[in-house]
Length: 175
Ligand SMILES: [Cu+2]
Image 1 (cartoon, rainbow, N blue to C red):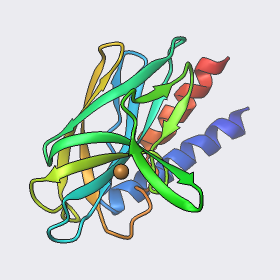
Image 2: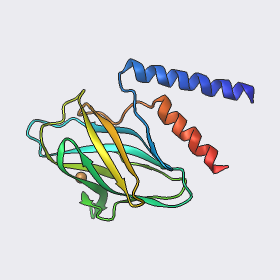
Image 3: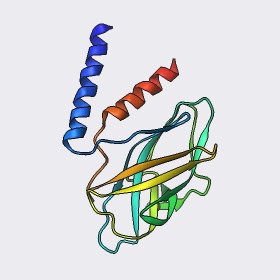
């Protein structure tokens, strides 16, 4: 037992170090039973009208909630999009009812999957920049968070101590 606890502490320390070194320390934001973490947006080419943003949502609560609206400081409008196959073609479409986050569920938005579509970009998303986002949930909960812009080839942010804590937290709630 003691050895396991120590390993987790070391792992968290390593992850925290890695996050600090690459300057991607990730802000986890909690509102009620909802936690948003690992938010990032992908840099866009010049004159791109749209961009993509991604994050992980945890619902520590016993009741389902839905992410129903998103607003950002960088886009005129933001939609919640789904990627899916239609025949042999990958298409994306808006999800007007948003994304459900079931009790004790983790929902990850990532490239190639569900994502936030930043429409009507005011300026290109520049690597190293940041934007602000406000997430609105069906329950009325709102989460505001900073979204770092990573490179065009980025797959996601490095995992941080905050993410790790979020997961450990989540496991606690399963007991
Ligand atoms: Cu999209």
